[in-house]
Length: 447
Image (cartoon, rainbow, N blue to C red; front, side, top):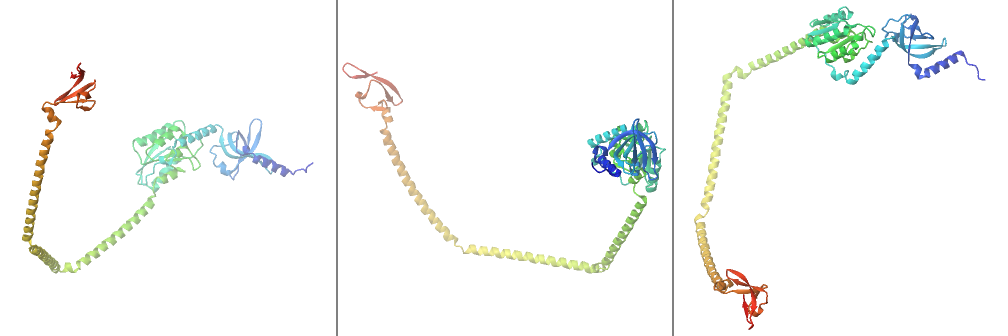
């Protein structure tokens, strides 16, 4: 038998086992609140129960500050909590992180689904965000005329940047009529180009009270606006879909007014500093120009213009004389070069060279004449030989009435060379085929 456990050891063991169970570290539980107490520290203590069981719960101040609904005994809530054991009493206890009234859970789920869908579409991407103008002339406000948000925004605008005009579009910011009024106000601002930048929003509230700013119609109007929009819905911890789609999200309405305006006092200081710098630079420029004019006025040329003109005329005369001298030198050099060429030509014996070339031409002509005579003699001999060949040519013989006989490509000189086959008789102007036919006396007859 093992040694008995101390109570604290058993409680610690159970606590450790519960905390090691990941399923029990974040559970959602629905039930009715009883024994509700809000401690001065901000912590909430209550019991969560149903018809059969109950369990103690605690919600620390940091998490309790995010609860927007009015929790009291009898409230039916949905909590997100982790389960553990309180060592001092050994009781299981729920440590609550989030809490909302039952029925709000469906709204929250719809909020999450729409947020995920629009994020997937890219509606929250930076590339769709417009820049806020640095010095807007007209600032639009879309909010309730009865809420504190209008007062906070207007007060901040008048204090920081009274030069800008305020264009106010009063709307409901919660309830059934809030959505169409918000949409119409945003569209009207765009249709009439009523402002350079627009602030839409309201003060804090529960998820139901802020729900108009999670409706798709309002979100679409914000996304399609050509006027930059600053969303200022609720307090710093409140987030709506409008905040993600807007060009800029402000933590509070006052912060929104500060985002869209420069600080008038700071602008005056900046303008004053720029004015002083401009004046200082201008004074320095004027002083430098005055000093330059003074130096020029005291220069020798301005004091004695005739002397300065004389100096310029002297430089011109010197330049003219130099140019004339250079021209004469160039002409003289060209004349000298021409004379040298003429002298060289005079020294060459042109007449003797011409006589030599003439004698050479005569000799060449005589040689050509001799060659011509020889060629003519040879041509005459060639003509004689052609005539002799022509006289003994077979063609010439045929022209005189003679013929010759061929058989099988051979020239026939005797009748005895002929066979019984046909043979060809050639005249000067054509040929015929013939055949040998023997008579009784043995002599052949051609037919």
